[in-house]
Image (cartoon, rainbow, N blue to C red; front, top):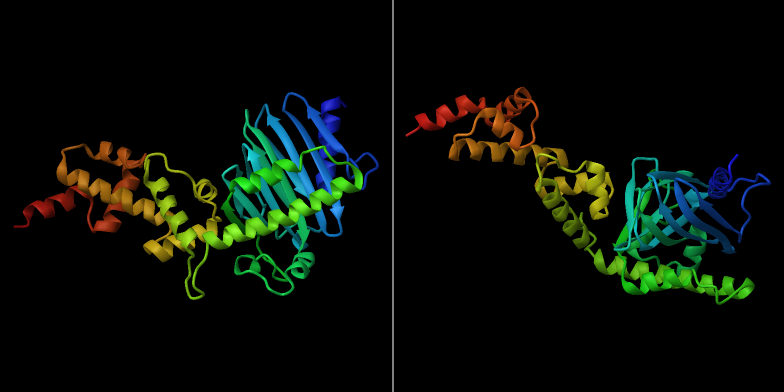
Length: 329
């Protein structure tokens, strides 16, 4: 086995918390440098119910790492990105992007999550994990509304809370990489930084997402859903997928679809289809474009599919619909 392959295996075992004697030990660093990536990853058990994960990686190829942990469903995780972007797949249908503009708090429902880096990406981030019970004790029963879904006894799907990554968050996260302290002093410093990050992230998420109890969508979710609609309709010939759209605005796919129904009365896919057909209808009425050209411009590669969709919405195929309009006084 080559050196790069051995190091990568160690990282995989590290993230899975394997007990193999070759697995990287707590407090040690894994360093990789091969044709796929260059990376330094450190995992530390800072104290009871508290872990810190430090990542500095540069992907030379598209790469995905699956992190496994037998106890993740009892932990709240956090990701504060200092530089770059990673797409996180929680492997239960929930996906999210970690970027320098958006920090995350999350509660995985399973034992695995996959982190993907695109070729050419430099990704530097600090993550931490806190046991659910430890957070409850810290809050002394006064759980902020934004954290309640994360602190439930059981979760059947991964829960994610995103917030704007303000400068103090990134500064604190960057400070975790510092080497001014060693041994117990470094542990003490890290514990204090993590607790500060939890407080700042919770306050930021609360401020962004404050809503009345009876409101279905918070103010920040409404903004995210309207932004998603703009992104969706910006290029109807090549729109983003539901997953890409959800990651771009910081919502899960399920929450995004539910939000579209609440604000616009349709799902994401239905909103796209309706807008495509409305643009086509207007193009027929105001111009003399061929049927095939109109279908292509609004995102249909097959004219037959376009005609079927148009008839279902307007009660007649395009030509017949226009003839009816022209015959009316």
